[in-house]
Length: 107
Image (cartoon, rainbow, N blue to C red; front, side, top):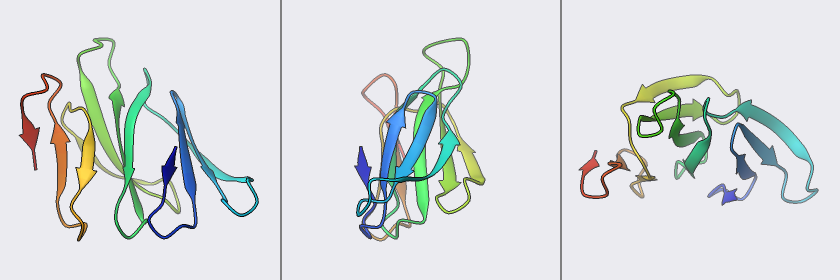
């Protein structure tokens, strides 16, 4: 579960589906498909407008990919090279992704 920084949404990453809930009502307000072979990580941008996710989109379980999407529409903004856990800087201008080896990061 991921709380949007603005408090208006909660995202639930359930493998192949990403659902967004209204925290006041508990109702699902939208959903997007996740990664082909499962979504493993997700994070909202500080302004709550972008959701970055990482997962497996190829048959090779070590080949992880990332996506940036508009929260309001689900539109894919950008695909990222194979990565693991992800985080935004506090100003939202930089995103870090961890390598699957656990020893590298990419900004």
